[in-house]
Length: 135
Picture 1: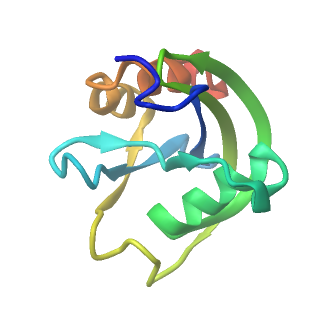
Picture 2: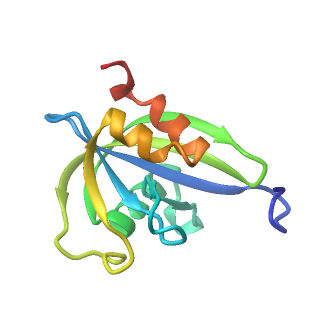
């Protein structure tokens, strides 16, 4: 796959939005593949300053989710991107958000989230390393 014309792999920040009381994960549909599910994720921008800020921004844009980044989970390099995963304890969901017309969102239990993300190896792997994995 390569770096898709970039000199270095793209830096991608992923939020794992968690509802701690119910032990559920919020997943969203992919814009490119609307029948597939993903975690909120996207490229780091210099205005984000830190990677955690990019994960929070992407969660708000893609899923309308607000919360606090509570834990770094893992970094997974691929030929084209380097994925950084962060757990987010969700405090609320916006009724309207930037990409609501392009995505669906759904709370699912951990096993179902892993099943839905299985098509995208790095996302399934990142999720499998979060704190819900051992429950």
